[in-house]
Structures are given as structure tokens and as C-alpha cells.
Length: 168
Image (cartoon, rainbow, N blue to C red; front, side):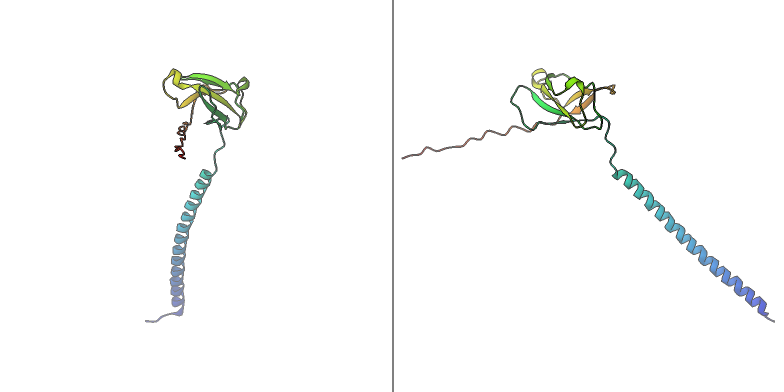
């Protein structure tokens, strides 16, 4: 049996091309796997970046706060603040089973962003209990919105100092 050198070179070329193509296939499969992992990581990072950006504040939003000083009067005062980004006009305060004693600082129903007004409630007179929200309605709002009222901290007990008589 005679071996020709041309056949050996052809076979060597075929074997080397099979080896190189198999290696290239393995490398491309591995790079495809890494590309998928990188794409998944980029997608997770984009979702995390979207969640990290706070949403824009609503045009008109309200927050009830306790006043800095507790005034001695009949009723419970609450500060209602516009924490939105636009002024609220035509603001109306509504009650749900309790009496609004007075509203201070609500001039012509307009409240600028960051501004506030005070609502003084007489809750215990009309309902016998405290309320946990008031209803506000303003221009552009079709239904009243309930604003949660913070609870008042309990009054501290009076401080009594026991004294002993001085015996001489």
C-alpha cells in the first residue's frame, strides 16, 4: 500500500480544520453564554436605576402635621401642608361627622407649595371620639381626598414634688 504525500497533507488539513472549527464553536458558545449573563446583568442594573430615581412629586399633595406649640383653646389644631409641586386653588375642608371650629391661613382657598393652613377640630363634642382623617377638595380634584391626621402624644403627667416640713 502506497501512501502519497498529497493525501497526508490533505488529511492533515482536514484534521486541523476540524480541530480549529471545534475550538471556534466552543469559544463562540462560551462567549454567547457570557453575553447573555452580561445582558441580564445590564437589565437588572437598569431596573435598579429606575427604582432608585424617586418619582416626581404630584402636583398637589397634602400632609397633616402637629403644630410646634400646643395652644390652649377648645379644639385640636392640625397643620395641613401642601407638599406638592404646584399651588392648590379652591381648597375646601370637609368634615365627616365632626365639627370644624376654625380654619386659619386658608386665604381665598389658595395654598402655595410648601405653605400650610391650620384646621382646628372639635372632634369630641360631635362624635365622642377622635378622628383620624379630614377630607380636602381643591380645583382639579373631583372627589374628596382623605388626609391622615397624626395622633397627639399623651400629655405628660404633672410633676409633684414631695416636700417634707422642716423641723427646728
